[in-house]
Length: 125
Image (cartoon, one colour):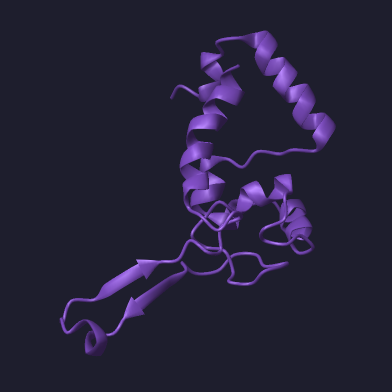
């Protein structure tokens, strides 16, 4: 299996990013951790208990998931945030489910898509 770090394009740029992230205390979540928050290290979870969901804090990168607890501060992870619209309102038997992006760090799910493009570039330089 080829890892992303096997495809380093610019070692100097990658090293500069590593140094800057260390200086600022930024830890990047893996894609596996984003998909399954159970894999997020306890040290990060402890930090998140004291950080607001919409605070500008690097630990909030670990909250780029549909599974954030629906609280403004200190929440960790739970089930997927969604709303089901009852048939009595829609007039159809089909279940209509809406995913809720409010509990993303910025209130928008687009952060995950942006991170998905940015992280590989940071890791490969």
